[in-house]
Image 1 (cartoon, rainbow, N blue to C red):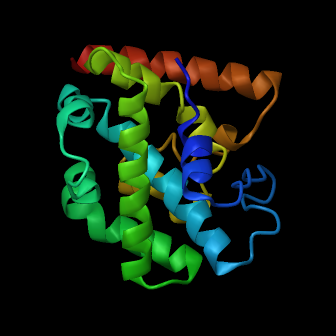
Image 2: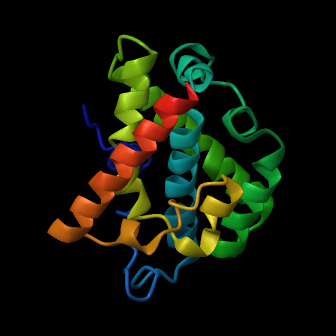
Amino acid sequence: MSINLLQHIVKNLGYPELKKVDPNTQDTVNNNKEEDKLNQAAIPAVLIILYKYTRGNEGAEQVLSASLTNEWLIQMLGSETTDAIQKVADYAGVSRQIAHERMELTAKQAVGIIREAKPANIQNVKDMIAAEKNNILVHLPPALHMGDLLNDTTIDDRVNKMEGPVSSFMNAIGSVFSQSEKAKED
């Protein structure tokens, strides 16, 4: 079940549509305004953090049951929260406070949208967010180096920014391998 979290968040908050990252330049086109850069960094960054957080049962359970007033960034990232906020602030050229507020708002929106979809259990939450991964990655600026922060080299991989039949096939293969690795860990 795909709900396109990124598109729903942008629409719900009244932001302009996010740009896809150009796989050749590894940047977005015509994204020079501070507000646009903040959205371009904050929204996909928070969603990929949420993706990583919900790979575990505890994270998926929290999405289903925790209060929407929680400090979601701290809950999802713990001690890495400050680093993530700083990466977004630096990319957008805004203060850490502004980046933090936008990221927290994005996290609360994402959790609210997932709950509105009424997933029956934690596996549904995991599947729902996993289905969003490729859409998130084509919008995530590589300059943020979120893969380094989250200890996942596949996040910053250039293949994730490409679209088309060959790239889709490669992404599908990558998803199968990451699922089999996750199954071995469980």
